[in-house]
Image (cartoon, rainbow, N blue to C red; front, side):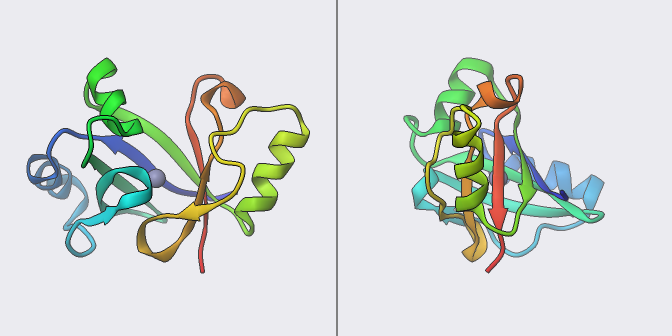
Length: 131
Ligand code: ZN
């Protein structure tokens, strides 16, 4: 299973994008707002994977609460899967907790779904399905 991207919570994309771009090269296009997650995101290529920088658009969103409690830092790891709904259903069938029972619209037209951090030793894991 391929790592699709690593999600990093940041307070301001305007500060974080240039810092990461100095390491990885320019971001793929302008930031995109993802209403279903209450964030604005920017993606930067890192070999076969990417780094996703997430800025909350709403303090009550998952990323907003993360920043309030822990500050900026690594937020989640995303794996590419063929079918997000099936992957989530398999986790539930194994008795694991999930944040999403069904995939929802993510950035760049992809379908995404999150496992609960308790399913993977405290790591928030996202699954990504390309259209
Ligand atoms: Zn992500």
